[in-house]
Amino acid sequence: MAIYDPKSLKAEEFINDEEIKETLEYAEKNKRNVALIDEILEKARPKRAEKGYTCAGLSHREASVLLACDLPDKIEEIYKIAEEIKLAFYGNRIVLFAPLYLSNYCVNGCVYCPYHLKNKHIPRRKLTQEEVEREVIALQDMGHKRLAIEAGEDPVNNPIEYILDCIKTIYSIKHKNGAIRRVNVNIAATTVENYRKLKEAGIGTYILFQETYHKESYLKLHPTGPKHDYAYHTEAMDRAMEGGIDDVGLGVLFGLELYKYEFAGLIMHAEHLEAVHGVGPHTISVPRIKHADDIDPAAFDNSISDEIFEKITACIRLAVPYTGMIISTRENEQVRSKLLRLGISQVSGGSRTSVGGYAEEERPHDTEQFDVSDRRTLDEVVRWLMENGHIPSFCTACYREGRTGDRFMSLCKSGQILNCCHPNALMTLTEYLVDYASEETKKVGFALIEKELEKIPNEKVKGIARQHIEDIKNSNRRDFRF
Image 1 (cartoon, one colour):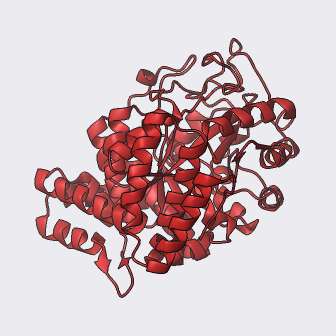
Image 2: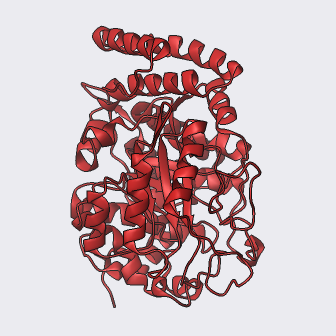
């Protein structure tokens, strides 16, 4: 029997089934233990430091107790602390991005994904470099600066060389004032050598969803194809970091397995990365299974309610306080609005989940990976964020200034990230307003920027930011950053 060891490089030891089961028993036993819950909440609460705030985070056992807790007043306290942590380390900024689907060719048999090999009626498509360019121009014309590229696993149609060519093409395109400044990559688990190639290509974050940490379920959900190998998939982040990639992004597909098991596994994976590499995940995504071509979410009997989804999000924020959290357009406006309060720091906007979807005037559905619930334009999403007190940010400065991995985390943990991220967000928002926004959005945006500039504590930084904002408004100069 495998023994739990967060420092092990073996999947069944750092994501240990016995440890998770014991954790869930412990959480169930203590879900109304008010003294213990109060102790855990106090540990999670952000504390004022000489500069900014510090946060202890929570172990997978402590966080699981909070997730199991069914006391209404304590749940409200969890939500309140989640909001405090989000504001302490990320402020009221929300980073925007869009997915870009390169190819839906796939050799895997994942039963929850319409790209699975046995789906013979979905049209298969792979973008040429000319089509990639058209997609990127369409995304730039919306105002996007950050992309997450997606492709099915197919060594013949989607080899690493194809992915690298696409990244090169994406970075090369400068259309009007547009430019993609950060390409995050969400592709199948691969080798250390290939991760080195992705690093050399200048990627931002390498993202890989575990889908489920429950090995028995994982094998059933991935019956055929290279993804069937649970250990190879689960150990991918260690190979990515060995290959020099500083920033990695975790996530499970909630609804495939019992959510408490997945939650414990997810936090254990974050603990493992911290224990082995000295830095936890750069991001954690929280997707739920959604309807798609030949996929009915009702076929999976572990679906979760909006209320449980909110609780999961808040408990992740308490457990892993410095990590960026991502919610996609899988979720509708109402759900996204609630989760923004509870710890989410990145959202997609104007997304299309089909191959070649952005260059089409009408949204195509025949190659979508999942149904998009939030179908608003990027302009509408930007205005909605601002009207709800958030600063939409298109900033990519940390990645391009080398503030990644442990350098980003140490900056975040010291509270100093707010000294550069707040003005950077305002400057990139100004770029968006000047170059792409509707008149209504501009009006809301410039008023917000004026108000938020006053919150910058350092007078010198405030003065420089104000001057750069004026330069953006009155010239074609772009890409200022602290």
